[in-house]
Image 1: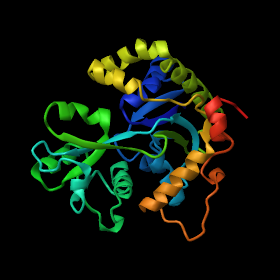
Image 2: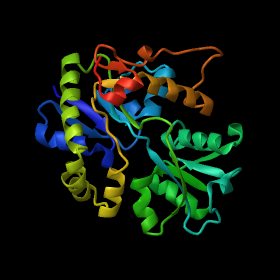
Image 3: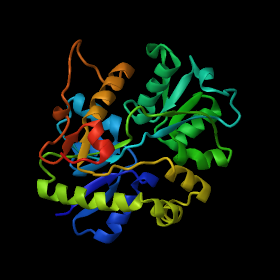
Length: 300
């Protein structure tokens, strides 16, 4: 039975979509998951998830047994736009202090990044107020009717709404961690299937981010698949960095992300508690490497 791979249909998934087009369902099928990827792993709806780094790490630390980390996908940070209503009075991030921020749901990336923004601004995080609006349409509605002041979402995904005057960007906050990791259920996905999937995905990722591909085929694929303006596509391709090897995970990424999540209140650690990186990773599939090894593309 092919692996069921959960993903979010955004421009980041382009190498995955190219892999799927060639595979034609022989070794895996894609399951589009606009929200709650981790819940789908728990509910036996998918076997593998390509999801945001912070959500995956937080889920394991909070006790989920539905998955372990098995690989990396995108190493560059995710650029979160700070978005307000088109006619709202807010002009910069500092204007948002003390207001109600929109989030899709508690525990989501929009929720976690609100805390990261607050920490960067020096705000008291226990004073943050939130309005839950479920999805991008609900969030856009809330900032335009004034029930929330702003919300955070990936920059290039939401830029078309700003271009259409449905909202305004008043700032950006990049994640203090690489944006996407890969996780898998410890039993439903066999080691052989996982290693084959990750090895093949690595080939597509490497081809996608070659300089000549970024300038040509990769840019054309994103334009055709997602309908983004060429200017936006090329701007994004200049900033994104995929992993060199999907089977490798930078150990420092895990410890650094966990530290920021604890500061932001997204996870709770007991005083003095330390979580070893190996507790988060299926070591039968992935290889933990150091930042220096990642930089030089060294495989231990």
